[in-house]
Length: 339
Image (cartoon, helix red, strand yellow):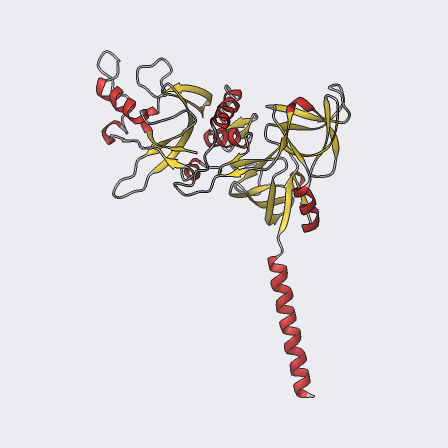
């Protein structure tokens, strides 16, 4: 009898351990419901904005504090947002969501309407890159379903079929060749955001930072990049660039008459000589024997020595000293990658 009790207790202990282990492995998954969910460093509206996540993105809930949820995003990023911006789903619900046909909103800003009319009441707003489930098409309007299951209508001309993303793995030399047509589409998307104000953590027409501009321009064209410039530089193939340290810290290098020295102009032209349209260009501090490279800014190269980037606002600037639209921090150009 003693052995039987002992055996029963042992079996119960093993079963309990297995149950706890299984529960620990279960993940709480959710889908972003807001057009742009604001992810903050701490569960507080006054906490700094870390990034934005777009409607239709699947995230994992890893923490909870009141109505705040800490989420792990595909960016990859871990930060806090409010629960009303998320739709938590079971494994079965998430599978059905992921397998459902989807459309992406391609405009800069728009709305989901309650019925197919521009005069109809709105259900929510939209920004470029938002994903919704496709329901049906009715002429100039398409019925869509939000993650919550709400349905509404969006102008068909602002939607395109979403067939998933090409993910560019991190690690130098990991580029999957992007066609010239996609490169042009990425640049065209970035140019649509010209004039949009800089917003730290922004990744939409509501405000965008430098790496957010690069990421959303690629997302809109089926390319998934990591969130930050320091991560983006690890994607694709490095483009050869020689940086003369003597021209790195001092961006003026001006002559008494206000012109730039010929040596400085020559150095900047040498830095960009290997760049091609669509390359990602990075600014910061070059590596030394004591410290690794530090990336603080990123833009997209347009050709003809010019970049589009978000600095104060989304704008186009020249990298060559003396040009009328010269970027004041171009001297901090340190690297480039090609996807």
